Image (cartoon, rainbow, N blue to C red; front, side):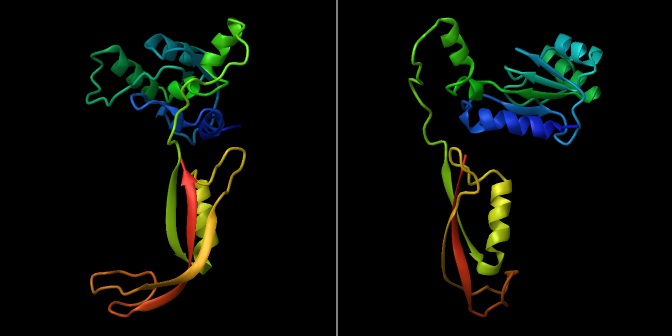
Length: 205
């Protein structure tokens, strides 16, 4: 049986969370990503009635287009429908996931469906998002390079288009001298070290 994180990983491979607008709150809003999926309910919005329907249909995972929470909640007193919806979902172990402007911002997303209905020809993104990737550079002792690169890949770095596990490495000698307050992984305080290191570069969203 698949876990919630398996479904969200697949959705985010289609519409990465980095594509969402700054005001948005796409992603897993409530729930444990390691829970097994019993059933999925898909909706435009997540409301109290939608959570009730999920309970009645034995679904523990709601995938909604609009996030029920756009900004941080400071209280959970049930004073409004947002709080009541979140409380009800948590009480009943129901995960809520939103896939909003990140789905709007891909060529095969919501706008594409509208374009197809209008029978538009050769649709294109008029204003593509920019600066979606940043570069991370780390210096690692050579005998730990593979382990560090794998950890970076597992965390979501190193994906470029249809390729994964992308990185660039160059070898050299790193020098450093820990002071008496340091807790060095290699070497001792007040002793200068020369270590064979790899400079590893990866991109991440």
